[in-house]
Length: 391
Image 1 (cartoon, rainbow, N blue to C red):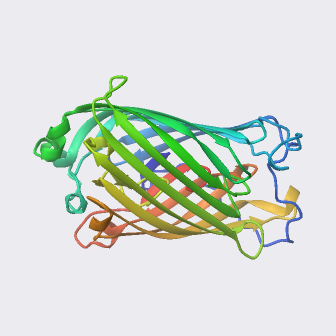
Image 2: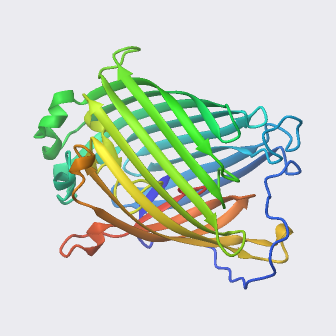
Image 3: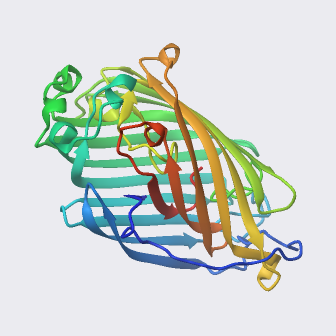
């Protein structure tokens, strides 16, 4: 994910195309076996953020087949394309961000392997723990620090029925804070764990999945429940537990390509949770409009409802246009526990979609949060550019 603030020089993708509705699509399942074995979409663009300065963004979407769609013994006639997304940026403030995300389907979708990797060497901000701490203004001389971090998170699940998969996962991560500002230096929670933390976790995963296409579902339900235990093995520094429940549902409306999607997620952490691993709100996949890490605590809960509209184009195979748009509203909160979720953060926004591969798009989202409504608080909408849908 590449996140920028809305400024005239933050230019990533400009496409001005008007298409009128066409006939109803005949066949919109465009991830079948007759597609190419490997498809690559590169991505390169300049940008600007107040925190990072001028930056260059580089990314790519790679999708590939792991099985023929009609292979004997497959779970369904449609075996989905696996994907790997890469993105990164480097700025004039020497901020480096690298990310990779694998979602792969094997053995006729009996086996799924996911892997997330991220590396950050960048200026960042820390407000403290809790809703009230996040209300403070963003002032680099107070909230700023330099962050060096990495994360590696592999997950493997195996299908035990047509809708249920179970498996396990690892979470290896490390964060180092330097050049800390006044807010961080005076925060007791930060000093409890110190500027350097390495964490090692292992856990169990349960999934319920009836989506038609994981990368861009038009119908179906998805539930991911995982429990991860962190300990002082493999050089881990802290002992704590994280329980994560992620629910998503998709309903096709008047035709394929018009979808109402909604999601609810909670992340609960217990024990000696370091400051960098607390539950947070604000990213390209949840409340788009808040800076990640501004609101953090041991418990987090949010919900989002999103309308997705892909236009029609009778000249394209399947009758679907490359262009579409989304609009969403959401709300979320952080607290010591679920009972402590008393202050709620509103969220809304709109986005543009451009299909670069079958059922896979580049997305640009313009998100708004509570600060946008606050008088006297200088704030501009957040702009996110990435591949595939937010959820």
